[in-house]
Length: 240
Image (cartoon, rainbow, N blue to C red; front, side, top):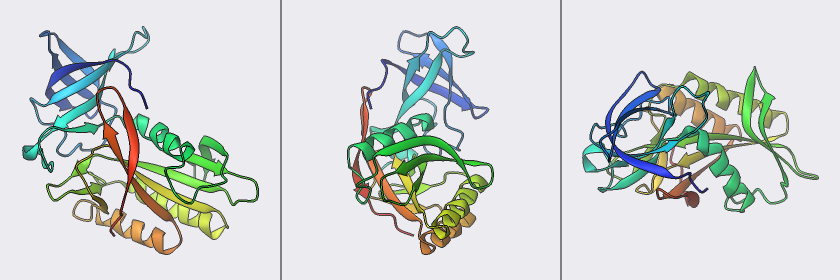
């Protein structure tokens, strides 16, 4: 996925979940939209290098959007200078690109992808895959940004009742004869595996293990990142 032209700056603070104050390299102070509603554990240290995209849409309240942050050892990264993609709105597109490029095994034959399809109890699945003679495959995407210095990425970074609900609904689809696939979209390159964050949300960890036992498939894909592009390239083990 090619990114729009990005502008570098330094993070001053992230606050009220959706806002971030940033000093650009030319000294200009701007407030950017933060497209990540999680706690952003290890990704919001004041002084961090960040990259913003700009919009010329006059209807937008904030012209700037926070896209990337550079983390280091002090933030829990495995090394200094790790780029992390924060824009959760790009995750579905990244996973769709990976599916269309056959980078996720077991999805051969699915030639139709529909986004945001209603299912379950007033929910929408991120991607619905369909193919001639194949059961529909319900794909849920989770963006992963949190990690520890031992190379373990974890999800979620805050309690998520919604995440547990999605797993229950995906399990119900499996019972009905469909496939269900949870994809952890890991937007950082310093990790070697993904685990449920039982230390943050044990209920989600239990829901994930229960979902897997019922037939929900789970994969993790790690990205290569630069200020120019993000590409999901590497399959990681999911350890539960």
